[in-house]
Length: 340
Ligand code: DAH
Image 1 (cartoon, rainbow, N blue to C red):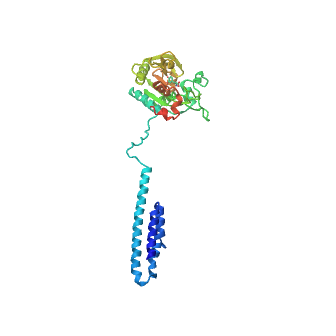
Image 2 (cartoon, rainbow, N blue to C red):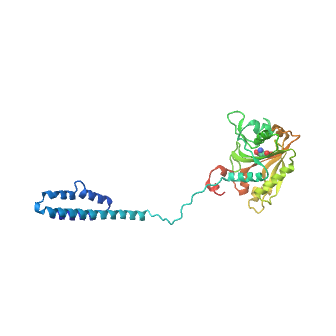
Image 3 (cartoon, protein in one colour):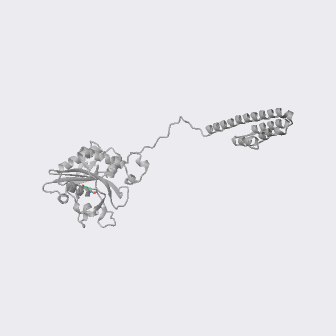
């Protein structure tokens, strides 16, 4: 009996000294495992003189119950403490506002493209998609630039390993495709898309850039139609108060050819630098479609006439938003792209 009392005391003392769940479990194995001391003590009843067996057995069972209860209480305690600790240490403030999801947006080039196509849609122009990989014939020759025409110097070209197959240097070859497809119907289309030039990359020129070409062909299309269309477009994009100026120019595929400027707000602090002191900014080239080009598209220049224009949309966007470096467009820098 005194052994039992000593066992209980020792077990309780060791239980009290257990610091965590792992220690508690070790304690449990020591006393309640297969050869644990409590079970051994219970088995020990066989060696007890008969007259003491009963009280020994009762005492051993009482100790077993008491230790089991004490153990379970300590274990529950240890679990609660571990939970409390993790709740304070890894505190989660559910009242904090959530992290905002970064929302995607359209690229500024796409936005401007949509704005431009939207304006021309209102003017009755449809969008015609044309290929980016062209042949020399369509990019140059059919646009009235034979192989050794000096005007070719205006376009530095990317050639492929297949002779005569190039990346288009402008959207103008699309004029040939659309005329050949629609002839002899009248045409009013814009041709947006990527163009490529083998050039030094600077703040003002890239090797790839977008253009929007326009083409209108019919039986009595005149220069006044071109001017009206361009004025309406420029004022929708840059503001109703804009003045539009037409200068005579030269392109092989138009005759006569013009270049189009808009006046720049004088109160813009950048006005002088942008316009080089003239007050005017160039936005596109244009003209009446050259008879040779009309004929190459299948239209008889005696019966049909047309106007065409072409603009670089990155340049237009740079003007509209005072962007000073064209390389920003394809650099994928979110600090730039996030501003639009
Ligand atoms: N293709 C010319 C260029 O890339 C732009 C252009 C000028 C297009 C006059 C036209 C036009 O249709 O009539 O520089």
